[in-house]
Image 1 (cartoon, each protein chain N blue to C red):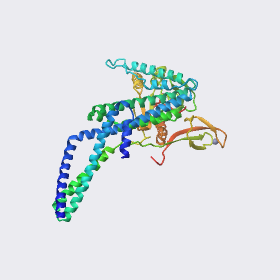
Image 2: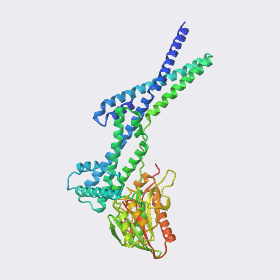
Image 3: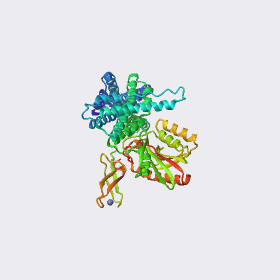
Image 4: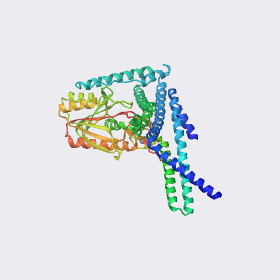
Amino acid sequence: MIASLLGQEGDILNSIFQVVYLLSFLLFMFYGQKIQTLTMLREVGSAVRKLKTLKDDSRRLAIDTISEFGKNSGDPTPRIDHLLEYFTVMPKNLDPLGFVPKLEHLIDVRDLRFKKEIKIIAPEADKVQSSNIEGVLEVALGLNGIYKIVNHFYLLGRKTMNLYVIMQVQMQLPQIIRTAEAYSLAGKAFAEGQPIGDGAGALVAAKMMHGSENKEVAKNILASQIEHEGRTVFVIKADGPGANIGKYGVAIKQFIEENDGKVAMVIMVDAAGKLEGEISGSTAEGTGSVIGGLGVDAFIIEEVTSKYKIPVNGVAIKQSMEESVAPMTKAIFDGVNVAIARVKRIIHEETKEGDIVILVGVGNTVGVGQ
Amino acid sequence: MLYLLELGIQLGSGSNQKTERSKSIVSSILVYYIFLAGMFIIGIYFLYDALQAYNTGDVEGAGFSAILGIIGIGMSIYMLTMLRKRVSTKKIPKKVVTTIECTKCSLKKIRTFTKGDYVLKDTENCTKCDQPMLITAIYTEKTDKS
Ligand SMILES: [Zn+2]
């Protein structure tokens, strides 16, 4: 009796559960997208929190670094907060003729504005420290921008609960987080004055010009004239050890024009982005102006070298995007020595005695003297 | 449960204007969790049912129940891992070292980086020949933990 009753109940329970099962599958079918939206939203939410931490840390770092050099000028926080919202409007390229001079002018004005601001909030900082402060501020500015964009999509996604709005940012999250973490590392390197991966090119030039006289030839650009195997080599790099990148283009143009175009070769050494699978710190040779940034320098160099038909050779020191802004690794440092050997070999093979060669060490020269 | 609480705090913090949304998200996630737990329990039940059916000799029924059970458990665990997926926040501790070399006797020293160091800077005198030493390298050392 009892056994049969139990058996019957078991059957009923079984049927109910089977119906529940079927319903749950239907639920997944119809609400799957909503569940997916929620999942993605959570993922983006946690990324936003991480970005906020990174952003706040870099702001804190900027305030601390600046306070050190501006003890008498009051609390720099409000001014720094203003600077973190600083924006730059790119020149319109609807009519591309004359775009580069406009861009160059824009960069100059922005740079000057930042330098003035730093002078006001950190009056006791010397030239090197001011450059490093500028680097720290740029990092804080960048992280603030990244945070605001991701947060915008996060909040928009929550408001609309639209899978595709959230997906836009969710798909790019791994890259965004990696960039932000790298930026954060760069901020610390600038604050401490440690060389970063991007400085590999500058380090090559620094080692080549070490021990010889140098003079400033363009804004933030130092040049030395050295003799190497009977060739006259003008070595150019940004003014270290502050976090500087100078106007390489202007300096190169000046040298070439001063020598009436009688320059046998321009060699540029720079850190270059590596693909996954390539070894960081490995070097490669190529042709063309190896220089990053917005392209102003590359434009000037290409114009002047093509005008005088001067070959431009490049040596790239490979590194990942993170490595290029984080403190320099041993592998990249070793790559620098290989790059120097390559530069010397190129000079030896491609030019003859009595020639004039321009060697440019491109990159942020933080923590690298000369 | 603690996790849910933490979730609520995380979602609640931030900006004030979105608390209403946060509540609705927390509640929908709560419903989702309960749903997953239900599915998991039913899955267990089906497995148990399969065992019983097998014991009574109903092999066909046992197989059917077993499949249902495994699907239920598998699916609930899968959905749970999907929800718990998070952005990794790994931190790589790195030590920056400074290499200093004597230009005369090539005595080499490696010490931790101090503020003010830069490559190609003349620094403290050599312990051997009392000549200023040169900073030849500054780089991060790979720590064992990465
Ligand atoms: Zn010595």
